[in-house]
Length: 207
Image (cartoon, rainbow, N blue to C red; front, side, top):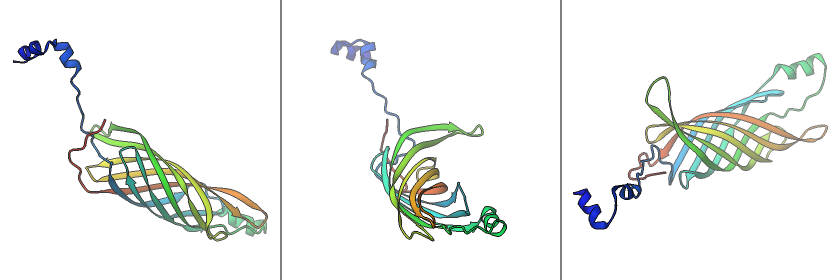
C-alpha cells in the first residue's frame, strides 16, 4: 500500500524517509514545574571556623533549560584549631566572623542533560547546571553584607518527581574586620533532595 501512495504523490521511498521526524520522549521534564530542594551545606574553606547547616531552595522552571528562584542557608559554626593556636599560643586577637545565614535570589541554566549507567544497572538521567545571583550574608560582624554568588551543580533524577542535587558555589562579600574591610569568599558544597510539582507530567516531549 505504501509504494502505491508514494507513486501517487510522486515521491521515492528515500525522499519519503527524509521527511520522517522521530520525537524522543524526554525522560524527565522540568519545564513549567516547581522544584523544592532541602539539604545540608558545608563550608569548604574554613579559616577560624568550621561552618555547616541546613539549606533550602525553591525554583520555578520556565522551560527545560532556564529556572529561577531563592535559596536560604542557616549556618552553625565551631572554632578550628588554628584560632586556638593564634589566641592561646601566640596571644593574637582574631576577628569573630562566624557565618550566621545567607539568603540569595538566583537564576540557573541547564546546558547539558544526559544519562549514565551505574553499577551495571539501567540508565540514570542527570543534568548539569550553572546558577548565580545575589543576596545578603549575615555574620557576627556584618548583619547583611551584599553578596554575589556563582555555582555549578548537577541533578540525578529518580522517577518522575524526585532528584538528588549536588552543588558547589562561591559567595563573595565584603567583611569589616578590625584592621580593614576585605573581600571574603565562602565556598559551599550542598547535597540535597528535590521534589517536583506536579508529581507527574504527561505528553511533553523534548529535543
